Image 1 (cartoon, rainbow, N blue to C red):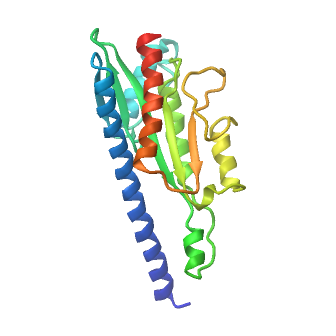
Image 2: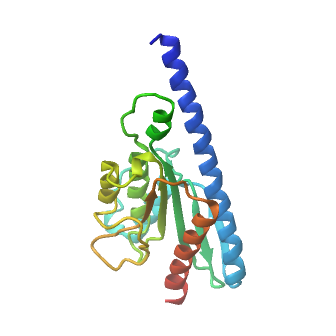
Image 3: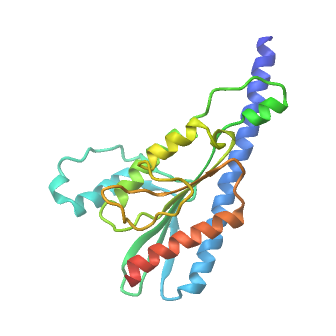
Length: 227
């Protein structure tokens, strides 16, 4: 194969992947906005706010207040370092000014071998989208370390997540070996802290994501403000 053909095929592949990734990013934001609209109607006594990113320095400062015995042990990150999950961070605040994080969400697509096979191309090695997920998940678990809930959800889809794929075992490991496609919000299995990992071949629709986002956010609200 000529170098120009090789570059063209890889360039086209990245254009397709980037286009799909942009659509997924948009869909999770739409689903999150719809969820906020529903929550505002159902919980008029709460004020909801959303942030796309949290600085790592701010997370460490929060942990230092919660665990002062470790304040001088935590590392000092760059001021520019941050965590930015695809669906951002959703907060709720009651009339007493108590502000709580009630939802964090990600969406990951991994695997294009089904499309490549249709185009007569060779299969590629399995991708690494979930490796990036793992980095964020470590930070998010730390954010909720002093809490009784962990309202995090990841929607994964793509060829790499078909039944029998070894990649699913990587996701299972990230979930501390607790099952996928099951809702985990309250920390009922300490010292393990499983989260909601929803993985399948088919792409998730906005409506499907909204249903799960609302379910998880409401469980967190009930625990944090009514528990």
